[in-house]
Length: 420
Image 1 (cartoon, helix red, strand yellow):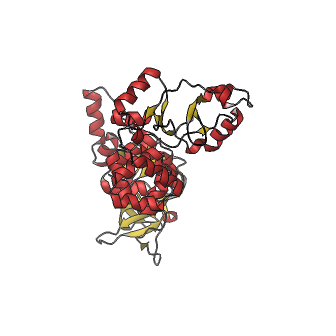
Image 2 (cartoon, helix red, strand yellow):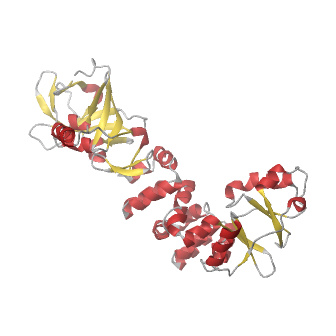
Image 3 (cartoon, helix red, strand yellow):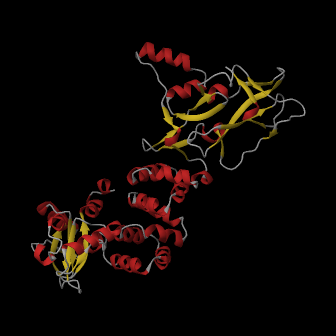
């Protein structure tokens, strides 16, 4: 199987490792110990072979252009004084055996952590590229030399053909190196995951790897994943960050989630983070921290839309468009005066259907369900069930709106296994 004569051939890493290496004169040079790839490409090309010379413990590197043939043996174009290079790897390079075999990876398509049993390579003319990761039993049996026997057993006993379980490399994120995790290509792959899936993956990792993965994420992705993560793990992740980095992430969270997290942190750590946060956000969070977590004041968020009665439907739409990304609630807009006295609510549906010049006073629904700051979670849950609303405003003794409780926030307290 000559490299230059085969238009397209698939190989497994396990089929290449340990192969004898000879030069063009047929003289033995050693055996293949690993392959080097450049990971910047979508399908990483093999750039070199690491080999161990016969009778020596030293490992050397042969550039891939020096490889003439990969078959029963690996033939290399090495003639004196053309000596092999030292076994080093450069930036953006990866050793396939050393770095991937038996290591954990994230399947970003299936959103789960898997173990690498073999690696699938595509040989086209003189190029060899990494195209798949094999995570199946078949790959493991191939490596230990039991592939044929295992296939026969499964076919005889189960009438089942044991197939390879291959994951395209473009969906694979290695977890072995903190340096690799910081690459932009890594951040792009992990940010494609749903925050809840990413949170599940982070929770599955051991404490050190969990911290490495979390710290590799951009601020927005880290905040989204953190909101979906178990509260105890949230605390451990934030405790490992300096206050400036922690504040950047927490500022991207909803005020209610931020308050819950800061409330679980040691007091000095929480105060250090609050000092680094933007003043307005810090004040909102401090106000929420005053209230017990399981009462209305502790469940509410201060990030909700509100306008006075004289505002028009067009102004309401403009507000929602402008602020939607930072709001925890957009289904309802609350109508209140400058001092916060609550008059009623207008649904997003009503705003969209209204004449743009209609005032909120014309659209308002004054049949409003609200709760006080000290309302218990059982009372709040009963109101959600009875009125089938998506959110309930929280008011003080003077009917001034202080925040809004979303159904998700209530669920996180009443049924935490469902709310996260």
